[in-house]
Length: 107
Image (cartoon, rainbow, N blue to C red; front, side):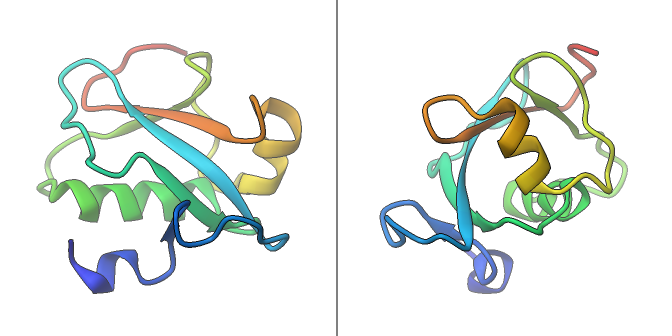
């Protein structure tokens, strides 16, 4: 995995108890490639846009490829929404579940 891509994110194995970060679970939907590492610890103030950019790099998507993010298979959050706000409202078992896909699925 490209170290530059993952430098601001860490796997949940590395950071088990960190009050500054929250756990997100990235789940593939539809025809999206499945990640080897699904659980990540991210800073609370990261935005949906930064997660979107991180995921695009991780999946090595072309600029012309679409990528959609959804919270709990329900809605697409706005790009400026922080992980903390989404976590506070929609966490499940102590983690925020984000589904990603290359074609529009829900919302």
